[in-house]
Image (cartoon, rainbow, N blue to C red; front, side, top):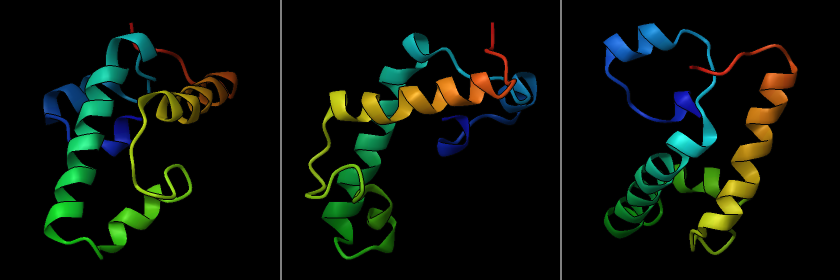
Amino acid sequence: MWNLIPADSSFNSKKGDKLPNFETYFDSFYNLQTNGIDTIKSLTPNNKFLQDYLHIFPDLKVNKQKYKEVVKPLLTIAHNNGFQYLQ
């Protein structure tokens, strides 16, 4: 989740390879992703970037619950593979 958003370098170095707390960061992450998708759809609707979202949102209509269902298990998998959560 961290690598999908721009972050200030000072914060980026503090977090290391720790995972974000889902409840703390998901809403902001979702809003940033939604704004990005909407902006690209309106400015350059044929942009290849949008293809990255088609497996989640085939019609490119972003749904918060669906996005949660995709992102949260990825964090769990990373945690199960030894990554710790940022405290």
